[in-house]
Image 1 (cartoon, rainbow, N blue to C red):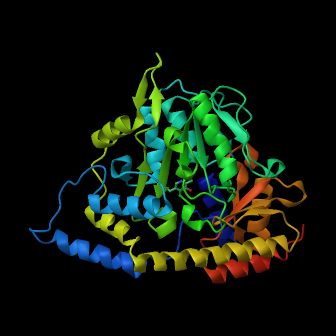
Image 2 (cartoon, helix red, strand yellow):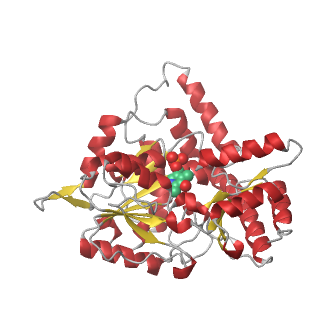
Image 3 (cartoon, helix red, strand yellow):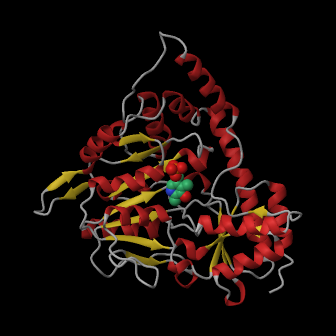
Length: 395
Ligand SMILES: *Cc1c(COP(=O)(O)O)cnc(C)c1O
């Protein structure tokens, strides 16, 4: 999908070189790293130049200074019981949500919400768990759980047997969330049915409402059934800097074919130390700086900036009578296409008539048809200009 979008945008620009095309389709941050993080990186670079402070291979799971800071700030401070040996620092949640399949059996049945972050589907296709692609755009061995305006984007429990489910909240691409009660339904289901929940919390820092969980471990029982993925990419502008972590509680158990219990923590530790040699020292110092008082304040200012853009998009489009979702606890706004247009039909209209680029919802899965994703990661100026054009919508 993203190459199709690039092709259409480039063709349009070649034909209309004078047009000011605004991209509200990007899933990447645009603000630079704040000074607290840059200063920590500079200091770490200098340490690398000195024999007494130089670092070579570090612990594959991450340096203690970072792991302990994560435990203190992201878990203990919220009253959550996660220990240092349950945290695995990595180069990204894209890699982790894909690599986790290394420790899971190939005949497991995988469920995904639909629409979905494409990495979960594509990595299972590569591993051989997805089966064959059908004419309706679905892989025949995957279980798709539709999330649309008809069910308020709240996934219902699968009716067939499932072993693994990916949940991402706040959600990319819909920008919607689950409340604690709604997420508890899934944790209870997983406990009763021996289902492993792979919970992607890449957008937790964008949460503004109090009944939305920041971590799945806020739900009682989740320590028995859930692995949590977190990334500094969107929350702290690390998309190009690369640092994330995965939490595998020692209490989460898998089962062999004969029903024997296996610790996923041990399996993941083995996988991680075998195939990964750690995140660079300089980058881990940068990640640590996200938790200093200055770092927290600077990061919050950037998130507030993006969330102000989200508000402008959401309110601007809603005032024109468009149906919009998300944008309250996430940087994504999920727009219902007007007058029954297809995702690509609306994309083409926005590009050709308003010179605004979105992302067609259908690219995230069959249930994304009839929607388009806009993001709040642009500049304030461009966001205002794009919303002004969208107000002139004539369909
Ligand atoms: C951006 C994003 C990530 C972060 O991926 P990184 O590899 O850490 O940059 C993870 N999950 C979702 C759903 C995302 O949108």
